[in-house]
Image (cartoon, rainbow, N blue to C red; front, side, top):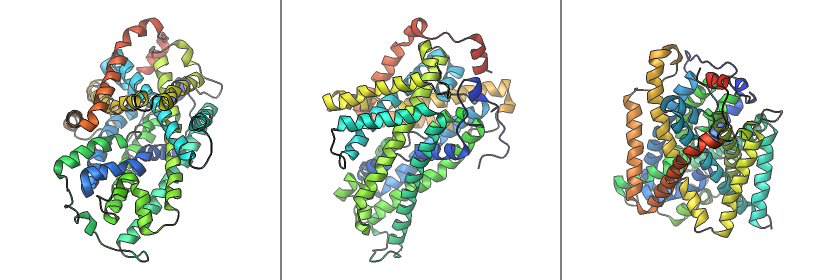
Length: 472
């Protein structure tokens, strides 16, 4: 539950900005949960375990705490100044228009490429059951999820609610079955925790393995910040973000740390099956019939959830960029249901570039596109922390009553998070397997920065009234 003394300037924030307040509390809760559980947990966790061994548990816990601090800092700003497109808007408020432009377009680019990548991933899964070309399946997924987002924000919320619910049920059932196995309550089980230390110790690759895995894990939590974007279309944006942020810790603990703990307890960490599909392999070891098919359905649900959210986030960020004068005026138009339809469609059309690249040049262009978004989220996290540091200082002078939901240990913990992310960048630069992501994402950063002079020529000129509302 959020702090009892949290008071916000919620009002009708979305109404002032043209968006509808169609998201309810259950939607906000599941959007936050859905953001924390992606396909990376079910598939990508295998590489983390191979890197850190059973100590992957510590990698997930440490990365989770780091992301939690970022969300707490973001939550402080949302409660004090709830506004649509919060990530870019807070950068603009605290560091100026160039920072808002850079964060907003980087974040839009991240989610547009993610839309294309998730459509390709979803098509690969469907291709196992449906005898159609994968580009046709990708197109089908894009059309369906785009239509969902065009209907209304409530439609997006309902789909995300049920997608996230399926993921939660799958994780809970996995935890129940796994706990029964390791405690000896499951028929023909092999209880005990010997796999945690039997193959080279708890941290077979040393402390360096744990830190290398943290680099990968930190990006697995990407999406938890989506709730701040959706908050402006809920009735009480500040309160909903405060509630969601406070609940992230136990979600991370249950859904990530506990499930990874069970995987490395039930299976030897160096088993080749762990790398390919850790959850399927664990369920096979326990003896669950059709484990592979069950997990494929769950992974498809996770992919569709990310696809749904990515279309939503890219459209709202583009709407905010237009509202703030960083994009052409034509994109600010809303349909009669309060949806930025042109922004939704432009994001989908741009995502098609990634889909086409995956079939024309999968090893070069598509790989570069995927690598180019690999570290963008870390850039955004750094911007969030700098925004919080500067905005907190300003609010303490101008409006201290707005600081009812605060970042812990200000300013020391905020600076510690910035340093920790800097260490992540250094670790990636030193790791040949991760260096390409860092380089490609830096290229994306420099490219977007170079486009800033075009803002004056092509950007929409926001009316004075809108600027006053945004910076109230």
